[in-house]
Amino acid sequence: MFRPMKKRELIQAVALHTDVDNKTAAKMVEGTIDVILATVAKGEIVNISGFAKFAKIKRPARMARNPATGETIRVKAKTVAKITALKGFKDIALGAAPAPKLNTKRSAPAKPVAKKAVAKKAAPKKAAKKVAAKKAAPKKKVAKKAPARKAAAKKRR
Image (cartoon, rainbow, N blue to C red; front, side, top):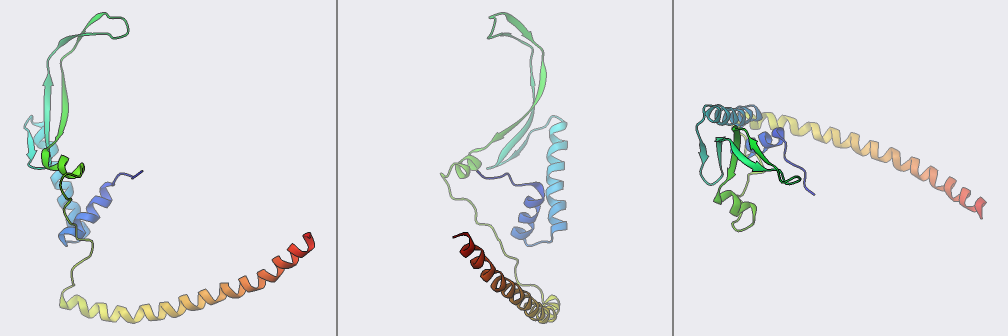
């Protein structure tokens, strides 16, 4: 089963897709949510075409029936939040229409940043040598342990 996307992951995905930094994307996502919440709190409907409709609905008082006893009871009036998925969202979610393609890679950095990137490229070579040295050490340890295991196996027989 899939796990739900968290807000932080959504912000990172928006940053990659729109080619902006995470801080700007966070402001955009937070701002969108704040505007939707404030507008719906006022009692207005927010309709994002092809996605969803957000509304505050007032339900009147009514008479209902208790299914366990069959007794008629009075239900008080209340206000509820309602989010309705629209056709475009349903089509994509249910596979009737293809999902939009997302950018998963950052575009090429500007020239001033490229100079910094060249300076950073030298560092991974040193890191690669260190990683290679670290990898060599465990192999020696494994080789030393292997004969001990064989000797223990021979004793059991």
